[in-house]
Amino acid sequence: MKDGSLETDLGQDQQSQQLEGINLSMSDQGLVTVTFQDHILHMHVDRAAKRNAFTPHMLQELGRAFKRLDEDPEAWVGLLTFAGAHTTSGLDLPAFLPAMQSGTPIFDDTMLDPHALERPCRKPVVCAVQGVTYTIGIELMLACDITVAASDAKFSQLEPARGITPMGGATLRFVDRAGWGNAMYHLLRCDVFDAQRAKEIGFVQEVVEPNRQVERALEIAAEIARNAPLAIQAAKKAAWDAVMINARAGVDQLVPNQMALMQTADAMEGAMAFMQRRPAEFKGR
Image (tube, rainbow, N blue to C red; front, side):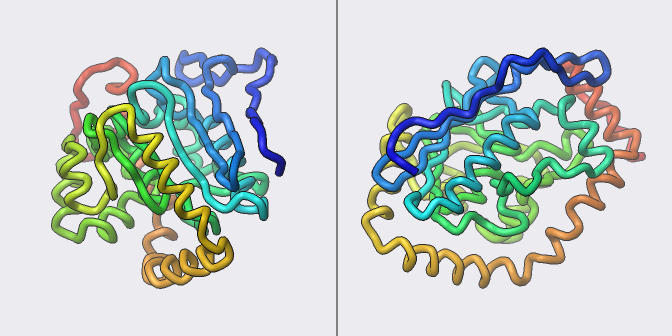
């Protein structure tokens, strides 16, 4: 890959996704921009007008960017950033419901899952987060190797408050990073916690002033890129194998567990409450 800018284009077709009366036009599905310089592949997520709420299209485009990083021998380090004041408010849930109900895979062979549930990108990835960093935002940053957070960042893994369960690795990586007690403290309460708490439990490695997180993450990526790339990749693989060999059973249960939950009345109530912007009333069935 040569230095320069590569942009994933959403295209001009007029297709739309429809779900329960929700229409999501192609122009509203979000953008992932990829730039490359000095062996650093910069992946930038942009749906800022919707607080970067993820659509399936955005997640697939990010998967293509991760695959490019994984396969290009000239790309030694990845940098993941998000447009606007917030990392992400989470999934655009109505757009994901059909796949969640059916268990249909989001990714195909042209993509590498940025959640790193099957295997991680071989290259190290540095992430910068700011503002609201909910659900998939936490899972994506925990699938990266190093995270820099703005001091205004706030975090929440709130899927159970919507009648579903985290699908992007939170249930595995919360325990790995924070320990059982801290993991249960946040996973089961679905609370909101700040950047200092995230650093205390190992979710983020540095906290910086707002608007400095991308600059600092780039500095760290450049530091890594000065090292021998194959040695860096070998170090990451050895560490990953040590952690994930015992986590395989948990990964294998993610889809079956979610499919079973999607058949419950509580899951449908969670989705309806989300769309109607009201508190959910769960019945435990």
